[in-house]
Structures are given as C-alpha cells and as structure tokens.
Image 1 (spheres, rainbow, N blue to C red):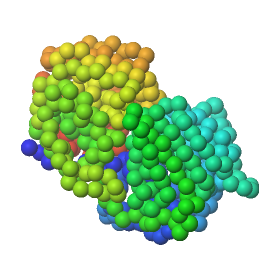
Image 2: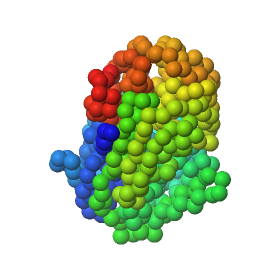
Image 3: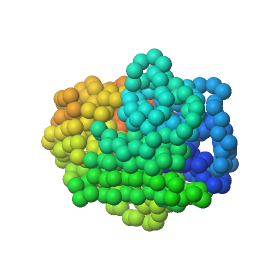
Image 4: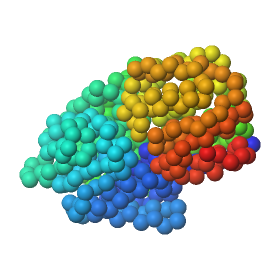
Length: 428
C-alpha cells in the first residue's frame, strides 16, 4: 500500500490568505497550497498592501493592513476563486481597482457576484463584455455599503464567500440563504477567528448564513493553523486505487462533510474504502482515507448531490467508464462554466477512448466497459480533466496519454509523481 499526503486544500488556502489580512495581528499558517491559482491570490493581496512571506512550509501573513489601490491591474490568471472573493473584499473596502483574468477565466460568469455587490452599493463596471472580466471597481467616495439579505439563484460557495467578505470588510450585516448548503470553509475560518457569524441549517439541506461584524469591535483573532490536505485532489488518487492501479492511503486530508460527497457515491458504486477521522484544523475535520481496487457498478447523481461533489464530476465520469452498467449525471449544467466546458470535454474524450457516452444539456450518460482503453485525450487546459484521465490511464488495461499535462500545476503540482508512485509506471 502507498501512503500519500496531498497538498494543502486550495479553497482553504485562498480564503486563509484573504481573511488573515483582516485579523488584528499577524497569522502563521502551515501547508498553504503553492499552486498557480493560490499564488494569484497571494500576489493580488500584496498589490493591495498585504505582507505575505513564505518561509519553508510556513506562510506569514500580516494583519491590520494599510490598504491601498493597486498601481497596476490585478491579474487573477485562471482562478475564479481569486476573482470572485477579491471582488467582495474590494467592494467592502471601497478601493478602486481593475480585475482581469486569462482567456478561460474571462469566459466565466461574474454577474452572480457583481449583482449582489451592486445591490449593496458597490460601483462596478464591465470593461469589455457584460457579465465577464475584465471589470473595474470605482472607489467609494463616502458612506458605507448597504446591508444585504441574498438568496443566490444557484448554490455557490464563491458567491456566499464574496458577500461575507464584503460585509466583513465593510462592517455591515449580511445574510445569505442557500437552498442547498455549499462548502463552508469561509464560515469555519471566520468562526475560528472569533467573528460574529451564525449558520442555521434546515432539515431539507439548506442553510442561512449571517454575519454581524459590529458585534465584534475588538477585531478578528490571527490564525494559527495547518491547512488540511485537499480532498478534491485526493479524489483522483482514490479513483486510481478503486480502478485497480494499486491500494492507496491518503493521509491528513480534509474531511469536511460539504466536500466529501464523492465518498457517498463511491459507496453506492461498491467502492471499497476505509475512513478514519483523526482531528481538527481550523474547525475542519481531518483524517485518512484508504482505497482498495474494487468492482464498480453504475450510479445516478442529480442536482441535489452536486454542491458537495461539483469538483469531483470528472472523477465520477472516469469511474463510470469502468463500472458495470450505465451511470447518469444530471443537473450539472454548471460544469459548462468551469475552466472548460467539462461536460463536453468529458464526453468527447470518453468517446475518443471507445467509451459509450451520451452528452445531455445538463449531464452525461456513460456505459461502462472492461475493454482496453487507449488513446490521447485533450484536456482543454483543465487541471481536473487532466487528472481524471490520468487516474483512468493508471488502471490495468488502459494506455492513455494527456495533452497539456502541466496544467495540473493549477491545483496539484506533484500529481503525476504521486500517481506514478501508486501505479508503478510513468504517468501522463
């Protein structure tokens, strides 16, 4: 059995770099992910006046920042999390800035965060295409933002976090009502920092999150934590194990229940795994998961499950390719607005390898096969597509290569080396 620690959680790393700058003193954080996306957030915060220093595995983040308007445009690269969370912070601070991204990020929708921020009084203008980057925030000349109660039209942790950051930085009350509760890393970090945040979960899977900054006039406590391993990264290694590449154990990985929906589906598929919770970091449960080669069966996933496994749909698609029967993914139209049109790219690549796959407007139908799979897949620069087909290529009877293999640096720079440790053969 191979034991591996995945890099620090990407979602928590982004949020830690931003929230720590709002603390009453300096924070020291171990294990922040050193990837392209997270570095975009760190550099953006430095442009705004934050002190962020990397010393080995530690990152030291200064609090009580003397905020300033950036001298140059803020380039978020390919990171939607950077862009959307930064918009909330900047709106709350009332700072003038221009935000842009690469060609992929510039195709992704921004109106879902811009609209509620404008409703709060933020002055935001699209510079080229409505609803897309680049955009400009104008400085707020006087007064504060207005309080907001918002109910997003779709489940989105980024929208929720954007609004919470706007309320925190602007010191106004905000409330977000979710029909389906989304990942809650922002809420857990704020709670660890002593913020006046409340989460009311309903019996039907929804949640109401409210923040009242003025109830904590003394300021937020600095962070002292180690970022857990990223479950979304671990998912690709677990998939390789289930597909027969070899038994693998992922150590010190985050087990936040808003992130581990993949394990519920895997259990239904007949996947064999052990899970042991071992402690907490910044209110986040952590532990180890061991995956063993398994005979898999088809599954059905719909929109109700999506908030807790949206990043793992590529994993489910390649597992479905080797499962007995037909697997169905529905209610996943949001995947067309990720780093790539993931539904189209998954369907095209599975078909190219000889797997029967029907692409629908909101999902996929995949008929599993035990026939040898071979070919070269096109990942469209999407890190999760590349890793998913890397995991499938590590399965017995498969010979799959991936173009643009280096795009995994967006979230998991050492992925190919770790996958090779499991399979014992060169990956990608």
